[in-house]
Length: 98
Image 1: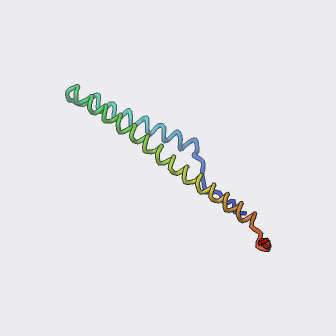
Image 2: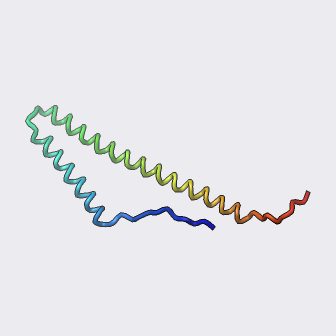
């Protein structure tokens, strides 16, 4: 009946490499900045922990958003399958025997 698929474009290898390199470069730049900052060791340690916390929070947020999007997609597919089944089984000319 209705089998419309959502528009999903696969991630290209170039985009994946660019994202990985960008993440690695930004992490390295901030790490080098923290190491060579002219401050006490405690301040460096605090900045390093803050950097790691920001990174793990970003990964967690990305995972939560992805999971919510996948859950919405799966729910809509199940609802669409139920509707298709009901429409297939429905016979408007069938008389109910009372």
